[in-house]
Length: 129
Image (cartoon, rainbow, N blue to C red; front, side, top):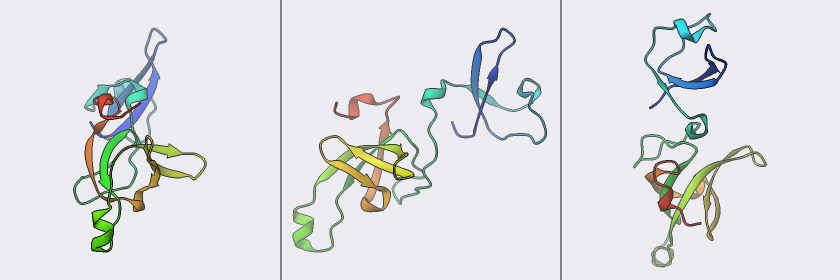
């Protein structure tokens, strides 16, 4: 589901989070919004990275992707390695990075034709511990 994260408290004081398709202007009282909303666990909500590769429509924080090293020559192509990594935000660098267990950390422009394999919430088995 895509949209904006809306959080607040229910009438009984418990924290609630929803994804709303679009946000109305000028109101903080989301209980009276007449919008399609889906209740979500906030820890499963991923931020859009801004990356729109050819083989994926959009990539989000928490997505698991497969990709190959960049190769400019035939010799490099023969040595290319396939990687699987998780997209995570880096406070240190102020951008999204791809964390590959045992293979290092890559920036988005360092990967060739990433393919979306799943995400850490629905497909945790895709990532080695």
